Length: 112
Image (tube, rainbow, N blue to C red; front, side):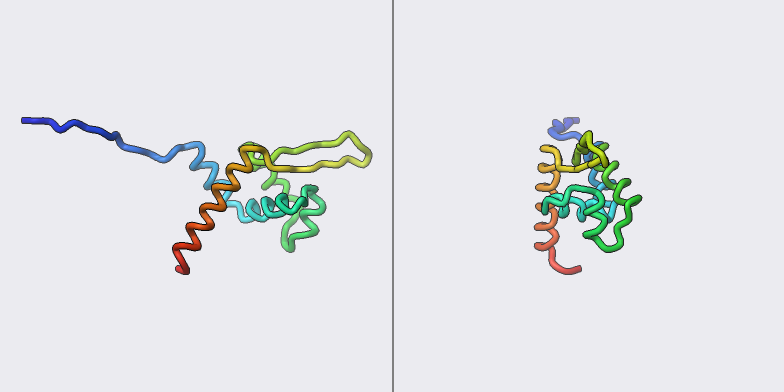
């Protein structure tokens, strides 16, 4: 009885990155926040004013989640009144590029 050589082993999804994509894309505000940052709207108060339906609480949760994954970074300025700004990290720029590619794939698939 001949056993055939196995060339490939079972492949599973990369756990950390798959979980990150699920959590970020599962948040309905993350993509909106990325658009705001792309348009140089990087202060939380301005973000809330520019997007109808976005509350400060939900924005803070979204920003915190993105900071945990290293997509966005927070800069606090030592001023009175306090000033905080957010921006994409280099990793975040790569992540946004991947999301843009997913949007292209969605467009190719056409309407459901």
